[in-house]
Length: 170
Image 1 (tube, rainbow, N blue to C red):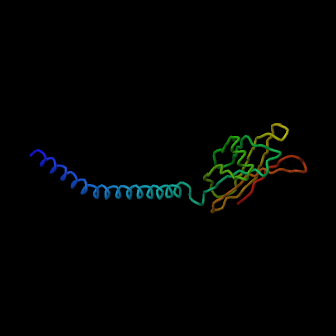
Image 2: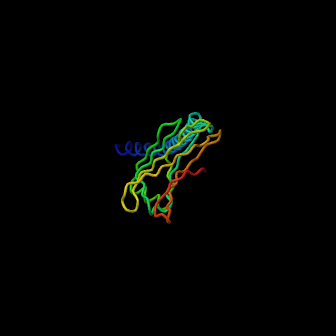
Image 3: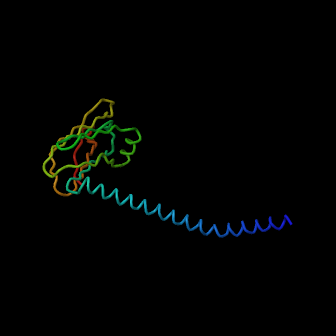
């Protein structure tokens, strides 16, 4: 007699488990869909926030690159100018190695109002003899209502066995 209730309980448990599995699968699918929706909404909110905080009329970006790097190894860069807070970066060995292989490093995205702005970049580093050097780029740039993208490029000057820095507009 005791075996019958145990078999009945086992059968009932199996039936409930089989019934619960589709419900759990549906709940799991709903959870995955909600997670996707939240991630998509978060991405949309981030883009909206970027557009509101940094509209195209005030968007400016600074980049840094090193051409060959035989005569100069950057240690740091500081970009200052009218209308924005100074941008500073200190380089690691891995970053310098990547720059020598052709990488272009994004330095900063800033808000810069339309008009003329004086920029000054001081790139500190060492030359091929281990001497401390500073490469300075000073230039006036004009920001229009379109995004402004500027690249500070350090290039080798083989004839002088030295390096020079310049500002490149994208």
